[in-house]
Image (cartoon, rainbow, N blue to C red; front, side, top):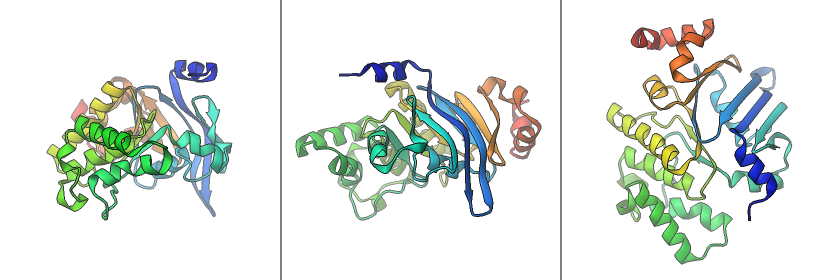
Length: 261
């Protein structure tokens, strides 16, 4: 049964809100007061130059690390201050598609996708088998179930990685550089997959990427991270007009402005 608190949270159009988040490693300040709204059910893209803090921000959002100061509200709860025990419940609502897929080489595709169900649920073996095969089938890779990761293509690995992230039926799905190392055709296929997952499951998506071709194709909201802060945040059709100077410099260097105008 859904609690009143959960119903209220699900009605909030902002699924995740980051407020004045700061993170430093020794004397190196990486996040210098990030404030970001992630819209529920939308594809929220985060771009920025290397070293801007994109991956560090992602690690705070999923609480792989604890921020120094600031808040991360997920479904209305501030997870920045939560203990590891409290976070177990929250992390079950989040899925992660790692850069370069990051599948376990010693496990079959089926075992990779089933792993989280084995570790974090009390589901029986037939239930796990059915859910894993259903998820693989929905992504068009059910025939790879008993293959090793080394036996499938890069594009298939990305699909398996998405299947693994979705098998726990998360509310939030984070993609870390999903098209890195892929050829243009396979990259476009991955873009289509991200769009498909958002449309079919209604999952909220955060996509961290350098692929500027993907950004304007898949993003509902684009956020530019610059020197540890969000410099510009806007919908694709307004992003160029609303871009601050630092954002425009980045877009020029990326060839986006000349391509768009």
